Image (cartoon, rainbow, N blue to C red; front, side, top):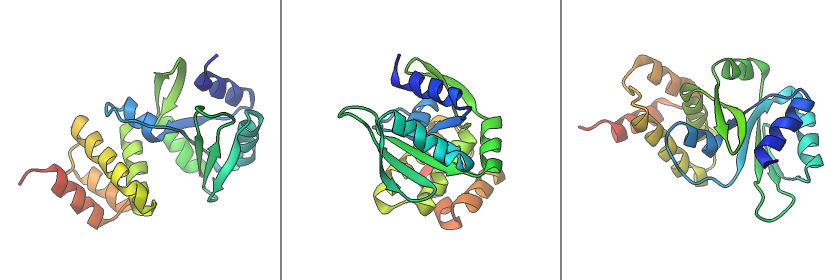
Length: 178
């Protein structure tokens, strides 16, 4: 059994739900890019259960920032994992619009394009400088490839809610020809 199916099976045994986010979700939304880890969006209330699941798989906490935990794999070459913890309202909204995809032999859920863009915009606003370029490239390519109307009110409001007016203007200028 593969790693992704193992995660799915272990989560089901514990009645844990998750969404695959990050680079793997970006890939499923038509923009192919390299990624070296598994990013999961999970319920904040299930934090200890998730940490226990990964500990039983041999993972060790590398960094814990409260709402974001990075885990080191048990062996070289194995997938590192990151857990992003969100409240139940956010999780429910994202799960209700989630898409099911086949990923490395497992049937997994990823965020809708709108929710993935919102996560990326949030990362642009709150993430560290070393990730900014990668997240901006993801946003740019997801918009172009999926033909998102950056001038729509829905898109602008999403940027204002999760990012900023300055980020919105920067993305619009980068994407729309003069």
